[in-house]
Length: 386
Ligand SMILES: *Cc1c(COP(=O)(O)O)cnc(C)c1O
Image (tube, rainbow, N blue to C red; front, top):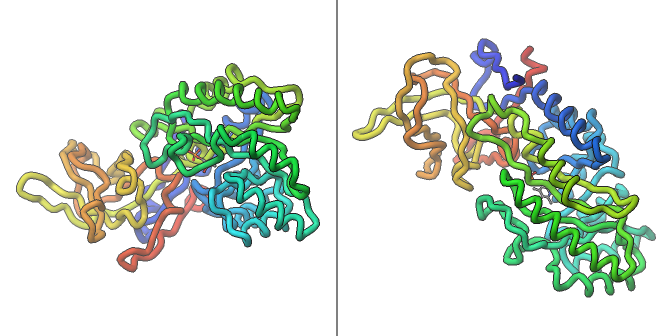
């Protein structure tokens, strides 16, 4: 079993809180992504918004993955990391002109276009540069992801994508525009999806939508089904590498590709979540009237997922082998929502113990804030602390 390992003796000398990335686990995870996706020649873009730590990006770039970006900043970060522009896709409901121009200047592979006015603006800006922008239409497939409502994106009530009823209208428009070339369709139904039937539902919908394009005689080079594969937050040691085999198999078995059509993926969380931990020190153990509180030096400023979407992270006391006791584990921020977990069984804990908040490699460090004028967390890798 490959699992995250902790160089505890090295941790003692580092100012907490900080992020720690096990790059060996990241490399093993990516190797599995490549093995499983290669079986069907699937193309994988790493969803940059999950984590843009330089060491993490370096591993991803070296493995040859492409990038999925949702802002100009991410397009720039992908280019700076050395990811080939021909492997970069750019989604987002609100692309500003400067972001579109930046992507055009870098000749990225494809814009995932989320509305009619956006398509017109990309056409206009590309025209001014004498370029042709390759575009895919992001279609809202009205498929439920069965995940937290804040991270569901593929229902018609969500702000993302073009509604299916508008497809013909957008095809008509794209045929009149001279500086965009329609090369694909794009979907992304949500995040932390563990129920494979959601992806199966997406495949069925994609097959139906392909018929609309067929009927118009339009040949699409690629289908992009986005990302969203979930990870196991309860048992990061036993499920350190997500089940990419089953995931890709769903698409292989249920999505009907036309000859020469390529299937693209945009995987974020499932690639980077398990290799990252937030390492924190216990400031105080406060015994209240009905509960005991473990007060950490990390709060939602370093890891906002529990406060933002009631997310669970496994918490381990790396310093203690004492019998379990029940605690509320909280941060130091002046907000009641700054609570990582309530009524949690954990080894008997004391001031100074080192704590790992597990599975924090995705949507962790990148969402850190300076609220309460706290410092942004630093990050260290297993390669550095060897
Ligand atoms: C966030 C996002 C992804 C990645 O989602 P994960 O759940 O991290 O895999 C992929 N595509 C788009 C368009 C996104 O916005």
